Amino acid sequence: MSDRPVDKPWREKYLVFGAPSIGAAERAEVLACIESGWLGAGPRVAEFERRLAAYLAAPVAVAVNSCTAALHLALRVLDLPLGSEVITTAMTFCATANAIVHAGHEPVFADCDRATLNIDVKDVRRKITPRTRAIVPVHFAGRPCVMGPLMQLASQHGLAVVEDAAHALEATIDGRHCGTLGDFGCFSFYVTKSLTTVEGGMVVPRDPRRAARIKTLALHGMSADAWQRYGDEGFVHYEVEEPGFKYNLTDFAASIGLHQLAGLDERWRRRQTLWRFYEQQLADLPLTLPAPPAPNTRHALHLFTCLVDDTRTDLARDRVLARLHALRIGAGVHYRPVHQHPWYRRSTGDRTGTLPNAEWIGARTFSLPLSAGMTDEDAADVVRALRHIFT
Ligand SMILES: Cc1ncc(COP(=O)(O)O)c(C=O)c1O
Image (tube, rainbow, N blue to C red; front, side, top):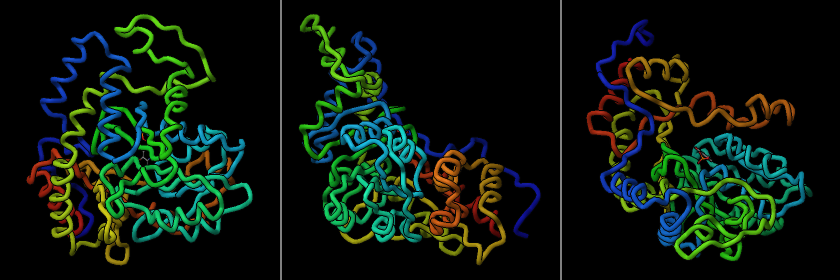
């Protein structure tokens, strides 16, 4: 029987998808920050930026309050003509495309590769027109895109590249970090990410001279930030250089980030153990598991995405999700393709059918819990639940 009417959960506690691991050091730093009397953007943000840049071997990093803000700012400081076409993948979170719209441009979706789920460079080439000005690749689930051919294509056509590295803080290609290869890299520190500040993000410009304008735009366009105005060196007046946004990170959030960064590799190794366990234990189920990492790359192991193999089971993806939920296992969907969401359908015309791989994956994909804080028993429960569902 593949579709029993009732699934009796054996777990008492719901296994939360993407639960963060916040340790004693983070808690102590948050308390120290509160006691310091300075919670807004200040010295802890500056230290977090320095350490993150050092981790990435990047010249500079600018902290903001989300990856969405990072993408928006990166696209803004490029100063592209309004209404430019910006090519991105349909297989991404809506924020990637929304940021293009917020910057005043038109997202043009390229299809993804069925095996890697990353943007298909051949389709990017097909989508380039005289109005194209930039490409926004996404290192999907933490797997590096093929940046060599993509950068070559961009330079042939004079296009900027903004890497959406929301999933890919630990990812590298030939030892170089994803997010440091294009003109800008944008990172996310949302709660489900491998490094969290609850909400947060980082813009990493390849050219360090661009950092000052990003910083200004991230804080209303003001010439002096709050720490400079009210800090221990005395009051300083500010000037508004251009109308900016309220995108700054806070010291309160950076308190968590500083110590999350210190534990990043240890948490990656824990996810690697869980990843291998899933690979071994799920190999015989009617699922397509993530493709093995490409040579000379490091996968950030952010999402363990499975595809329901409908040649081997009648169970639809949404039914699998409902049954996992009934068994108290939280799962995710990354993603239903962006062009199929109502606003994109209305604004660009219904393109359903034109991005076949993204649509095919969007109907079959689901992601298993993969957090460093999971116990071996938690992971065994996920496997047990899937075995129960598929037998
Ligand atoms: C691929 C991708 N890009 C951008 C974002 C936006 O990140 P944030 O929530 O930090 O704005 C996310 C968030 O999950 C994402 O998955």
